[in-house]
Image 1 (cartoon, rainbow, N blue to C red):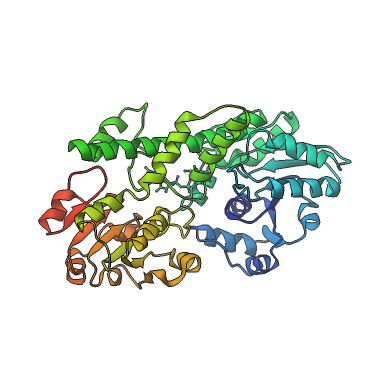
Image 2 (tube, rainbow, N blue to C red):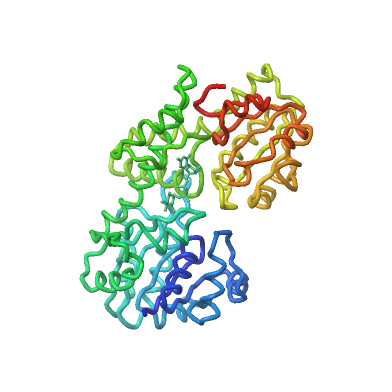
Length: 435
Ligand code: UGA
């Protein structure tokens, strides 16, 4: 059992704190937002993430998970302090470290005995050094800094945390290495590795992993776009190349671009870090440019279908979140589609199982929010599928056709079989496949 403080109860902090409590540690989560802390004390989970609520409640009840607004109180007994603070992109695309360095500065004044201070947020190479300097400026006791990047996916965060493919620990201190090894041992029982390295390599590992995955998706999106030009089927090509274990089957699904709070931000931040060193990531520049276009790749197809005029057309939209099983709409391709369609004069009737509130608070009533997936189809000229929620995968096609004015589907996530859709009487246009 270890005593842990987690500073910042955003997505990463909350999952980290809850999952460490679940493995028997004593965890105090610290956040400056009083209302949020009060709600969490009452068992309210401030984000939507499958399975988190059950673990959250269980560990609060067992007194292993508690919350405070006081950094001093939160870290007092902790041997390990996790920093899970926001690193939003600044105006120039580089990560803003002011939250992390602000807390590091405070910690220097507050710590009274040895602590392991861990960067859990995604931070540019060299941040551990900066955090070290900020703590050191005021510290009167020993401490170590560790870079421990997080690889969890939204929607699978609890599972990813409890059963990680690998744990990356960046530290130059043997003492901190031992503490971190003990902490993570319960999570790597299946033989998955804890990989130790220096701080800078750990920091870069995180950016390199996300940038590689974003590149893999983008490559597949380009192949899909080319498939349409030459009449090939991207599903076949995907399986054909994915069966080579050097390429691998995962993250090869083409679509309407990657979104979310991680890939777009991290690719941009790595490019920016490169520029600071007079290093140009040409491949990532291309990835960003292609992804930008991909978010609205359906628009020319839709315009073409309606002979260039979308004025007054009613469009149903299935899915708003950047991916299924989350209410997160940051950099969601659906939002780019909405903007483009509204500009063309179309009307949008949308449905998403979790993300509608978030969209409404961001863009208001410029689109209509429907009670279910079939209401979003009433009298529409076409349906656009933007997110591959499970509920959209196996719909009542008869009911769909009854509700729609015309049985026309533009599918940005390739949910259905083309032959089946054609035999059911739909016009079905997807990504990288025949129409
Ligand atoms: C991503 C990484 O997968 C995590 O490993 C990482 O920890 C996380 O970022 C982070 O840095 O915090 P996440 O953003 O939650 O996780 O979502 P993913 O499941 O990776 O999907 C990202 C985007 O890629 C989505 O827009 C998704 O639709 C798209 N995608 C994914 C595709 O278009 N095709 C695919 O084959 C896979």
